[in-house]
Length: 486
Image 1 (cartoon, rainbow, N blue to C red):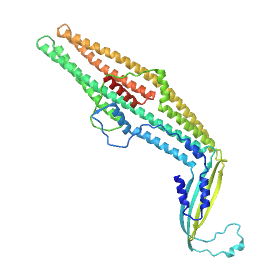
Image 2 (cartoon, rainbow, N blue to C red):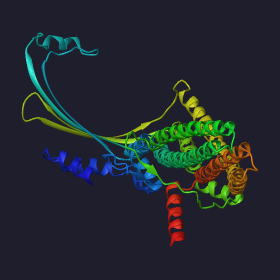
Image 3 (cartoon, rainbow, N blue to C red):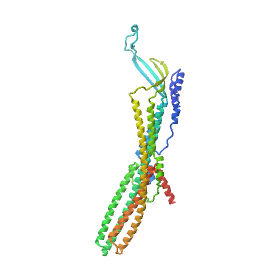
């Protein structure tokens, strides 16, 4: 209605034009497909959108949920995907504008001569009546309003509108898939950082163990109960443990940088993350997960919508072989002096394509091949989904086996060290056996940490490949842990 009011206001500027205005406005409202086109636009499923730019605050103790929320708010790749979807949404409005009347207005002023121009067919006797040419100039004023309305195009407008709608849905799905990948990257980087922090703790504990071993060796060497080799061996073990600690601490630094990059931020603010060797198992039913993925994966939905958009593009070029029908209206006001003289016109147009150098034929064939390529892309995504889930399930099962095995290994290593230390203290064991037991315990501690966080990372990959929201899954696990603590 706002457009109609603007049109009415424009025509009321001129007197004695009530009949032309009614005709032109009625002509503008003849396009009944406008109602159908509006009904064809369905509301889109909203996705998490980045908030307005604000100052970045990274808490000193960063939880996984906080890291994911920072990613949603700050990551430029996700913002790019959202803005691309928003740009595609405007294309729907551009396509819908073809259903509405187009009104233009113009005004001009010329200072020009008024010499008569002889045209073919003018009788020779008329030439004697002509006034000689002159450089005399005259004022000439003009103003005009033009209204055009496409009435029927045999499907061109509706296919353009549907293509824009499907392309927008495809870009929304792609933005959702971009978000899922980013959140998976954040969870993977977060777990890697937590793992490396625990490995630092394990390395520090190993250093403390070797320090204690060195003290015992030196004390026993002083009283003649140990050889010089035992002292040197303890010092070598301690030095190696310190080198391992330096490497572990460097891994923490680099993994924190990787987490910052995964969140899409740049910060030098030091922060810690949650370290927990407990985890919530994930039900890895292959048949069920494949079915869920085919229902939920945003990239598959994006491929399907892109195929539908390309199909509408193909139908559009098919419709370009057909004529288009439209109506036009104009209102002019012109004269070389005031008051100006008005004129109005109303007409109908029909445009019939006859020959364009086979351009339309090639455009249609190109659209057909593009549709076939989109179908191939959709099938490729389906095959990739099934393959990725099967691989993720295998990785998750292997990770679970590693967790159980390393936990048993840790218990065995602790018992082995206890026996070796007892034997060494009473003089029936060797320093080599004690050193090996301590090395085995250090390795077992690290392997338990790596196995647990390997399971968490494998679980995150499976969640992402199934098409589940990583943020919702993380919230659900947090609630389960809180209930377990209660």
